[in-house]
Length: 466
Image (cartoon, rainbow, N blue to C red; front, side, top):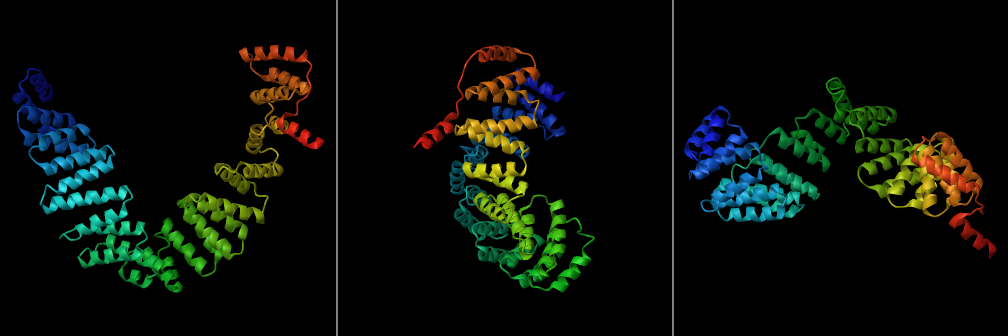
């Protein structure tokens, strides 16, 4: 009842009584956003700015994107606490995705505080914002400033190392995490991040010394070419990690390194069943097929790998290399045609679609693509040929039949136009459109016309006369 009673008091402008009733409701449910908002509002009306700020900040703990709350807090803090005012304004701009304004606000906040905790929190937010904007050097500068303070959270070291990694500054990332350990941050998170960096730099012996992860240990053993030890560890953990993609990729790596390529492929397939469509799957397969001297499959898998990595030009080149080796794989050719079309190379794409039709003259997608292309360049006779093949496949597609009839009429091929209009009328549902076609057909049958060969045909006639 207290909320309803509080609302009544508000309507009667008895704000102190309303405030007390809302406090009763708050004691029962301190996470009710409506109650918190009304408490903040009534506290302001009563001049209780500190209480209002308390309730509004509690609202932000539950809803960090509430624009109204930030605005109310800014109004409270503008005269009393400039640091908090600029922090609220920065948070508001962040919520509104106005990151440049937010950065300026956080910088201004730094000028209004001497508290280490405030400074550290603000610099951390600034570093994160710089990361979001891709300004990695500025982010690095902020993280480095944070490391000058005592009791820095280990997340700062990890995030700084990650920024270094974005700019391929691996030695700096390693130095950062080594520094974290020297400062007493000896957690598994720090050690595993450092171990992975050591592995990237080929320092497998160092990684092996600090890792507590069984799978990372196997990775190190493989890197050190201690294959017998790696195999023993793989066998020991096979039941525990039989469905773990990292384990399966390591098993594949072991068999690849020891020359058992068929067994390596077996584990790649197991990996793919769990981690579907991963670039790593295609990279591993490509490397294995290269070692098996199967250049076709190697090129195809490098193409798929590069597609997933967003390198479409490289993928096209790999597919073209595969096509030179083997030109009768319809699945590969279809993928190549699609890529070529997406890249804007229409003519080359159509060559691939024509090859698909040679391999399978019932390929509806290829026939449709070729028909559309021929229409776009004014080669209506060839377009009609492809549409004929589509109709043969899909004999009850009355819309396709109508399109073909209209095309033959455009080409002034009266017999075929009449035939296809009649076919359309025989299967299309009776409606306003079919009535129009009946009238058109009557007119067409009583009209003389000379066949038109279309734009391409006309051009070819001109050149044949020269």
